Length: 236
Image 1: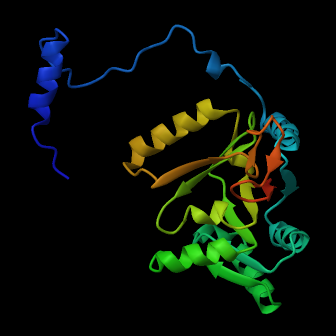
Image 2 (image 1 turned 180 degrees about the vertical axis):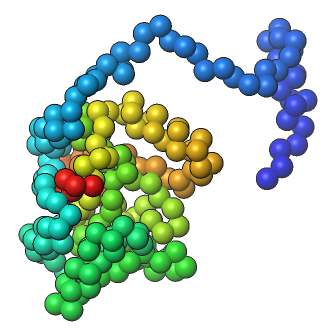
């Protein structure tokens, strides 16, 4: 979309502010202090997982550790714990590479409905996600400090998969775990700089939905999944 008369408009504002010209490039300031970079600085991956585990207890989220070879069975067990019924997933090649798609096909033959996101039928996707018992997604970045998973949306990874189903299972590669929001912001900035591609939506999700708006009484499952499980994959 073309922007008409932008330079003329900006020059008028600059003139009113007593500036002679509009700066073409904004230089990023170099801050003297950066305390946000010192939180959990130097923590090992094992230490970050320990922090994440403790935080998950506070945000009413189950955390399971497994490895790639055991991931399909671990997933089946969690699906069974959640009552099976129906699962909706992203269309993501990693699910096939990790043996997840084969397991879901197997569960489908056993009576568990399984649907993979299809960008060509947007309305149908949303309707199925709304009725699904379980939504399955993958965390791109995982924040140990807050117990937050970061999901990148695109045409194959609909936002509704993570918040319309009653329960949510998020696969967490061990390598995706970082200290906090500081590292996530830096990662996203560099990713966009390298590829020039911006995800259609970046979701920061911290466990199941909850609210304490009424007299500070916590209610879990207010406007999204009632239950959430993070499955850490140790060798990814």
